[in-house]
Image (cartoon, rainbow, N blue to C red; front, side, top):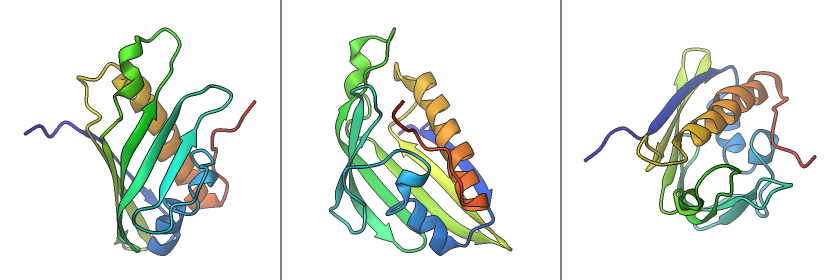
Length: 153
């Protein structure tokens, strides 16, 4: 069993309930706007990155407010100029897990993207994307109220 899934952690000034909300119903404030909100287990949301055609559809498989959010990718089309077409489906079947814990007067959010590992062709591109959106935009959103989500040009 491999343990080299993609992982990152951040500390934010927002409380755990605010962090949970940002990872579910408020994801458009720091990542990209989904076609439907994630509010309960079984909800599916398609995350598209305009103006391109890349998208990932996630299904909420576990929502334990305010401590844990798990979503599995059930549909994927990752188009990236200069990359081989094999990357298009690499996220399919992967699971994103966010664990939220209070850490003194801050909240710690651990991200584990199970299935995203260095063996994948998209790893470097996806690592850069998570670093930008998770460690950058989500942290900014939860610390200041202003994230840097992807927007159409």
